[in-house]
Image (cartoon, rainbow, N blue to C red; front, side, top):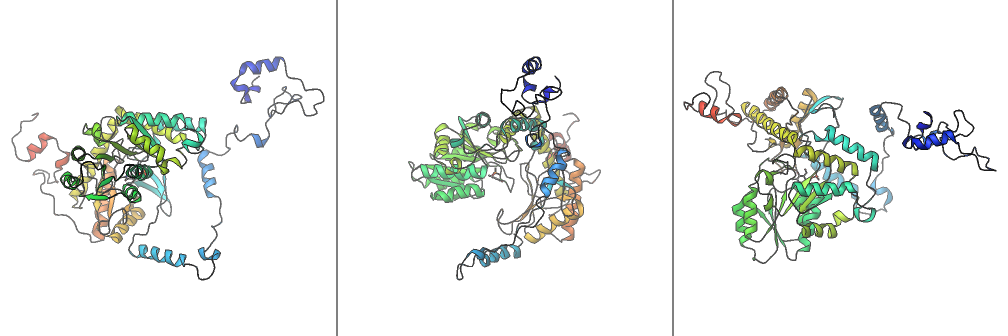
Length: 534
Ligand code: PLP
């Protein structure tokens, strides 16, 4: 009986196994096989009718013999041969366009300006964030540039949900939502996102790049003569959606409601208009005056398209972003978010009123003609959103903000020109592509600190920077070490420092961290006579 339960079918139906033991099936007359096509059955065997399945049918019931990680490593090591060398011109007649020469010259130009992209191989350690293995030769690293801001990618609840969906539904979704069927996991996630943003509907995409590009592009094409008012600092995905729509575009100064108002006032009142901006800027870390920008837009009859990519999961009581933090969720007409940063998965979405979302769902090529998210990813994201909306999410958000403020103060103490901003992003402008690259190389190779330099075209030339992200998992000691090492490397490269910080403690002479102080401490250090406990 115990042997019978090795069969995946009978294991689920013990009553059937019992019935088979008491009355084993008999071979059909004339059947020369041994009575059954079931790989587990052997009517002549002992114990009766259970046999070891042949190897070709065992892969789904036999655990891999090596530990899962070793098995993955082995898989990654194959194939071992180098890919073949092949020139584009091999297939072309003489006199065809010199494709290779042109592309090589463009790449050479990037190399000469230090804007050529070189990836750092990093193996993140899910059990010990923010640690990883990486670099060449491989060594332990601390990660300082991950957008997995809260470590959700490895949260036990997220992994549990993703594993369950993976086992139940397999790896890929199997196609587009329209042609291959929509998964209940996608629908549950869309409902959860709509509720998070207090919007009637949400729509999933493979990424938020695609959500911005397709969403904005489709709306601008569908609304006849629509004008778009775009923040000057907008992300490439928003810019691409606008450019491909061909809609007339007006740029307003970054986070400047007054300038937006001036530009909107020049547009006829009955013309459709969309105002697009990011709530937390991905590179300068600024937080937009979201409520004011929305008010100005609405006063001129424009709809608001707000990219909350760097805010979802990170601001607001349930993690809906800056609109929730500022209690103006109702002012956002359409919100774009990602599942790839604080949610710890991959994918993007739009949420908004039904006609807007439905128009994109029905007309947006970037939604219609592409395979939908793997159900396991959607399930993991669903679990992450639940964690982020609760007490644990609020504790993680508080820790993230505290750490960002602490790191900013440590850099300021060392007179590094860290940008003042109110978000969790800590940008350190370097202003030179080569110097930024050298800083990151030395930090990686000599100190095991992985900090990524951000260069053109992510930021304009001359505005290269290090974008530091201290997560709740970075300890104060790690932050102090980073600040010290960065300061050393800064010195070695002869980069300019800021003026000394304004004030220091009159007793211990250490610089005062105004941003970290309580109201009482601030008043005390400014010389006010404040009673202890006031
Ligand atoms: N919007 C902003 C402001 C971003 O910074 C990014 C990516 O970094 C995106 C959109 C695209 O999001 P995703 O990574 O989901 O494609």
